[in-house]
Length: 328
Image (cartoon, rainbow, N blue to C red; front, side, top):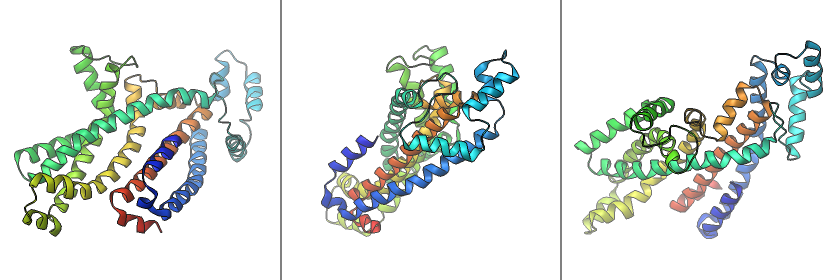
């Protein structure tokens, strides 16, 4: 993710985003530190309230009470919560995310194997959403109150109202069990990616469509659009060259937020489709009260969401240089 950020910044010319944006990036990255500290402590606190004994889960049903107490002492689980938090943060600052309570696997290694699967699913879903929603939003705005516009908004309302796990189950029943077109779960090639990606894409497609339509309606009523039309510029050129670029700025905000939502939504979708990503890993770790693994997944989710939003802010300055004045 960090390599992608560096390449993205390198593509955009420095004079286009200005030195003030570079300072803004540094400031945002520094502000991320207290956010991470707060998120980790909050997760620590919540997991401590969940029922269950980690030591007894590790040792099994046949373990004696003495052995359970001994293991808890060895793992430091009898220490106050703030001590456990401080110990974990000390290890994290040294680059050590710990090992799983359940099977002793390296947290960083396991997440490193799973995260590409989650990212592949999420990026496929957001690409599908953009390819579907932007054209529908633009056409709905240019043909306001038409049959296409009304139908598009009804479908968007339906899509934003349905929970992702329910959509996933319906798609499995329809296209996997009944028609047999796609696998019902697992990761076994491109075909197994289609149903979970489409499940994630439906809700975000609805949100991006509504935002694009509203933004386009506002832009096409501006005076400079009427001036371009009066000068004889073709309708398609007015829409694509003049209106769409300005209308995309609010849409990009929603796309960035939806990417973070999709990462979170992938938790349920990966569980429904048995997709081997960090969302499913986190659900399994919560059930086993595997604190190090849960914290590792949360850290990755938080960092990913923060970096995506930072990239969106940088992209603003590229689309509209006036925005970089707000970074000073």
